[in-house]
Image (cartoon, rainbow, N blue to C red; front, side, top):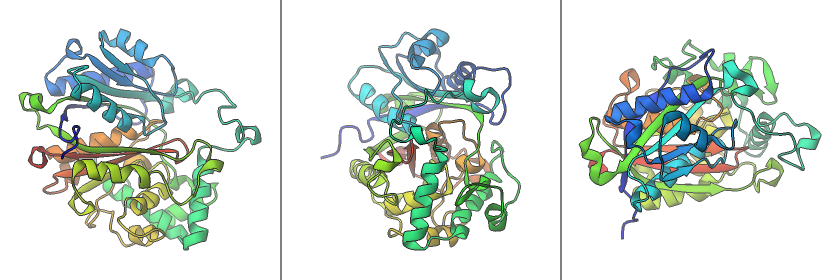
Length: 385
């Protein structure tokens, strides 16, 4: 028997701002631009929205501020924060609210001025949030991800060049994306010889710091054909968590994708072979390697060799991060919603020079905290429902 959420809801509107530096604007203004863009894309206005899903690092009362700022009168609102995976998790929350009739039009939106606004654009909260680690002054989150990379290198022989191949693959995709911030050619040597940030990561192993916004509009699938653009249906979704503090991660080489992704595949009633395109939260190069392994596209420890082979780059058999990802396209503090946005563009056939021919099913994986929370979502075109 099919899961009640399989194919029950669909994305019918998408909004993206420009990426990079958006000076003299607040995160609310950037988010509002994306939200209005998504609603316009769906042929709707803020007056149609009765479900609101937002989050950031700057405000614990963001849902209230956003409802007021946009003039929305929601019957459902949620500003849960589980890190950068939050917005993929919001897809699940919105789907549940829609499927149970708690709302009719759900808006998921994010805006950030991480680059131009600094801490004012994306405040990360008070010191001491991680009580047993912060006292030592670690450089987080990068230090935690570097530990995972170092452990993977030690345990499986993953090389510096293989990590760099993740970054060069993302850059090759970004070169095809007019929105991407970093489009100039880049080699493995460029990555490996760049300024060291936290061993084994150089600056080119690390995501961008950007201003930018994204938003999507979701409705029940029974209404999805009433909107201007082809609907993108939610087929399956699964959430997993292993820890908050990196010292509590059971295994630095195994993420909670291994927990959540099987649930997403089961709900979607598909296998890995059915996936046409994948969008990962690549905050650091090690993420992509870990996620490929934990999704089962290769055995544990073989992710480095897989990416080095060119499999995830343009022309490869596993297209990953076709917009350029957080490494080369955009990363405004919380990247999860941008994985969904790229999936929508791919499944609509709107991905311009980076379009994957015949794409019918897309997988997104949101990552939060220090490899802490993982949310895997699978989307499909109307032909897959």
